Length: 214
Image 1: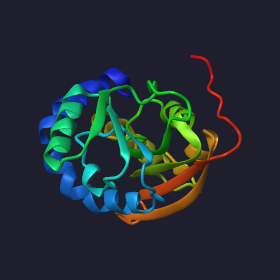
Image 2: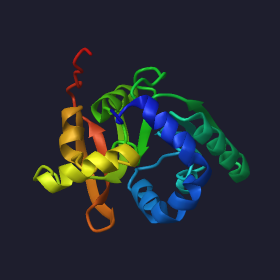
Image 3: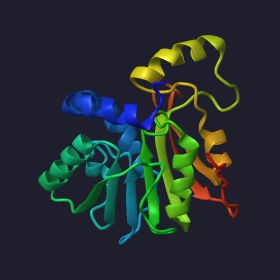
């Protein structure tokens, strides 16, 4: 019931005025550590998916072509203002991560920070990231994940009924999600709260992911 695109747009519109106060300091180290794993080069075309208010902006190189999307117009407005204050040129758009409006192979780097755990269908978002990445592109993911070697237990699944409604899914597994959508994991490191929050760099495999028809 709650895990829908419409609900996410509504709740993040409500969160937008206080989002920075909660998230900026909390995730500063994790964001920076995740982005430091990317193999940066001048002139790269970079897409921030689910970019929120732009809290990743200070940790990005200045010599890249930067694009950013978010489902919530209030978040995009705040991101645009942050970019202006930082002197960063960014093409920021309101867009659903599961339906990216970009050409195939457009980007060298796609960044997905703190979005896979809140998307209604993370597989769809990852398939879109795979589509818009070039053949040698890098996917940079940072989020909270259940351990890859075991599914969530009964207690965690029960708690997830509450957390997924108000904030985030706590049962999703990083490597199974990435591998099922055409990625291989190159880097995987804990960045916060033990191994709860992880930063991963993934590259495209030769196989294209397939999506079932709705």
